[in-house]
Image (cartoon, rainbow, N blue to C red):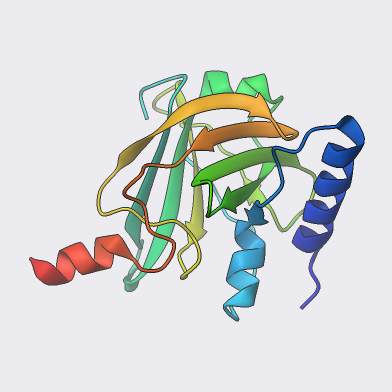
Length: 175
């Protein structure tokens, strides 16, 4: 399956190599992970009180209580540091072995659309339908060490996240 998301990853890798930055090596687009699992790829709408933090959670997906989504809440100061404004699109990449994420501004219509919260001027949210291969946590966790690099914003995922199974679903089944 060939989608614009795949070209974006190739372009970012080429740009990163040209700039002499190797931080992007090992990252995979969330869209690429979903496509490898046989899921369709769609753009996602986005919506934290911390202007400079990143949080990750795995939640049930709106009206369909049998599906889950990966939610990344991002402080506006961090988004602005990579030039993202309300209505822009972002591509999310993950490096499983390094347990890191990367958020890059994107022009692809397939990327997640960022919408800043109308009730709280400090946050935005990116939501992606969950599938195995994307990171999952049992409850909302703060991501550490957000920094510029790799053509966007790199952050460290929580140590207790899993790329193999939905930890939130396991937690709910155990209760």
